[in-house]
Image (cartoon, rainbow, N blue to C red; front, side, top):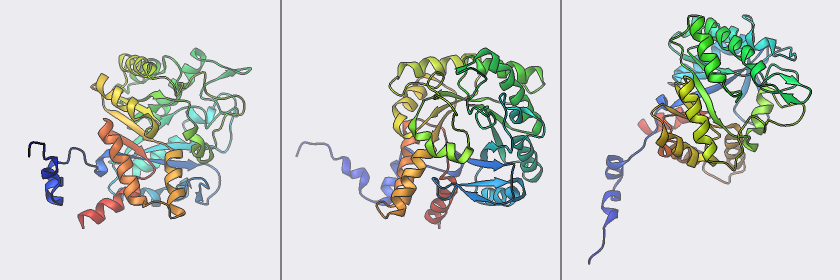
Length: 325
């Protein structure tokens, strides 16, 4: 018979392992952590089962667990006790992210700390930049973002990850870091960040929902593809060392597009809504959570992501350990 026999390379588990094109390891993942300034209780995020807000008093124990899982990097999000119009808590040397970073680096100096550099969690209006009336100010916000990045680097952050989507933010932060003596601190830019409904649970976790309007004047339109090339190209030119695409699951075409256009490491952010949907379906017994999680994360690698920011990182450690055992 004259046809191709593709099944030859699927004939056994060993054969499939031999020709597998993409795999997942713990080196692929960055684990998000929410650190709160107020209170001493560890609080579960209602819309994200298994994700918690940690006070500083409980952070060391959680970091011990993270390191034991083989996770190499964490990304920190802060929940301050007080907020104001300019997000002062984001750039103070005693801010919650700065204090958490120092604690982590003193305890586990080899664990990479990625500092999310934004204002939304620290402003009383919940936007990622300064505001005038109901207008989000671009250029005026850059100085505050630079102060925040320098403060985070001074506290010991290994990577600065600006997520604000102000035009020119990478250039401003790169210049500010260099002038402050942090020329070796890389920037992991949220270059391609869409105005997505998939962020809903995160805003519960980080207490950072906008108090008026939305973020559509600075985050990208989900309908647009070509715009992603422009954003990624600008950030690479301005000095980004990594390019983040956020969200991931509904934007795998964009992950592949960006991968094809850049030689920088590409990071997919497996966001809160993607996490929450899987957890909800699993709790109802509708899906096999482990298989769904692994397939979903593998799709991000296959699309071209070098790294994945995911709330599933600790779960994946359990899955991989079970496979190895």
